[in-house]
Image (cartoon, rainbow over the protein chains, first blue to last red):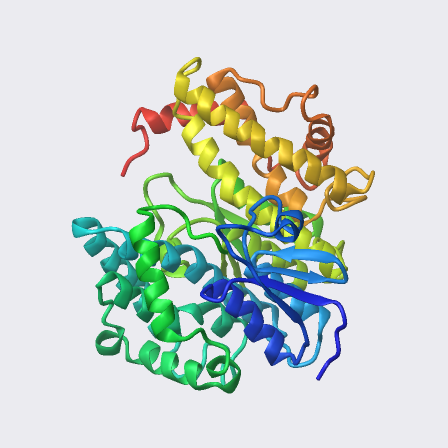
Length: 227
Length: 230
């Protein structure tokens, strides 16, 4: 284990963006203090460390705050060099970053719409999501994980889909049908969730479904308080 | 390290702030490249083949391999031509700050510009969107003070990742100033950024690829009139 005396992570138990950071920390064997935030009553520390977005996750290392989960992942990889999560080759790094921003911007947008909206808009969002899943499915052709034989940056970035997409489907009553239509992606979801670092660091499913069900009822199109 | 006989092509367009980003990066590294201009409203086969997911410019094609998404391309350029001036700062924390503010710029500025360029001067809508742009610029002014540490650029002595990300938007910011007749680059309100913008626009790597505001205003008129074939 790498001892890092001053690593703190502000998070929320149901948040996929927070888990993404925890997976990276655990893959690297970095010890950290976890602080659970009540997002309806944010702590003064969170607001001090992330005054712009006021969101979780926030990683604080030696009193320096780092925000935005993908930015945090890059920071972690650059600061703790063991078990690298990004590849070495610049072209492979560019591809890894490409897929990470694709899921974080595009897939998240369509999933959010499929989750919150109803009727035609919901159907359109599911269609768009399936086009995106097809692209991810093709990218996985001949590979166990996006990063190759072992999980890496891209898997951690796409990882929310392995668990939270199913949660969103159950909570909001829709199906993206990846098990039928996208065999590579479906297989990746199972393999990813079976990895020890991931399996041991997921929120309880039932509780998460209930949380998202309540969240859907609360607000129609309010942005989720996490990045 | 790049090979001697590199083939570097950039699929782009003169008006795009996103295309400008890799152009500045390549110029900083002294890399020679060929740029193909996309016709607005009609995507080339090369673009569709190189970027099937987004079908958008810019795309860098390095020895036949495509790289997409402007700031990902900038980082690729920095990592591939690592002998020249470094675009990202060396320290991981400074890098995270540059990345954070780049994400902020991309989250706020392009959408505001897209909205503002279609609005009428003096309209209530223009006032509302202008307020949002001013608020974003105010935050970026504070970011500039912290990142520059008293030097001329976000990147310090020379332009860096965040300078490229934000600076590439200056042409359009100046264009919307003319369209809605509201001053955004106001040295009373954001003196640090105004001075920075002058330095950025005058930089060797920037001056020939920064589109002129008047030309962008004309471009907007053509967009609105449907002049570009679909």
